Image 1 (tube, rainbow, N blue to C red):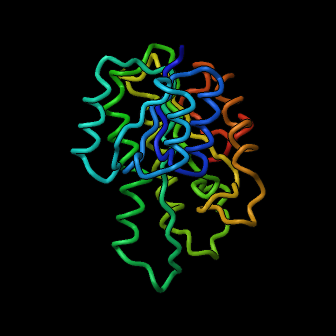
Image 2 (cartoon, rainbow, N blue to C red):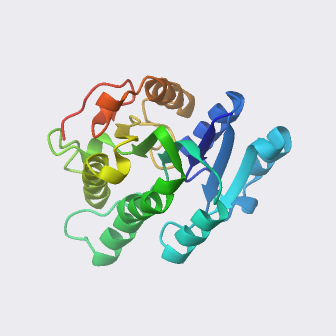
Length: 229
């Protein structure tokens, strides 16, 4: 039975990944700031029993990250998906340090520190997938007229963390990638987005299944194609 850890599982893509891997027969460790508060997670816990473990985790709190890692002592993961994210829309002329700091903490610093804490919990050959965004591509520079500047910067930084992790000796036996899920109809993506959660999850999980060591350090689309940095 594969062990899978997913962050930000209370809704959207995180919940979609959780359902998918439970249905595939995996043991899933689903993190959220207050996992007991969410009905859908509770329903999945009832349905799948001890194959779903709910883990309290606040990515903005180093003590919470350390506590979660301690609680997972003895577990070896086949897959970790850093999915949790925050988007705040703030246009040029209204930028604030607080908005940039909050978004970077959740989207970049939190995943970096969690990965650091979990490297010792990952099996050789296991996959570390950082959910990024096309907005994080400097080459594509998608929608610069919007107020998603801090979010875009945080995903660019997450891409760099991905590339640097993949090159570190501590990760030489892991496959570390950043993945753009596409524009998805979630609370973050909005109702006009191109993809349903299910469509994005099906594509990303198929890509994950086909990852090889040669993919490590790359920025991929949900279909597994290389994206420009």
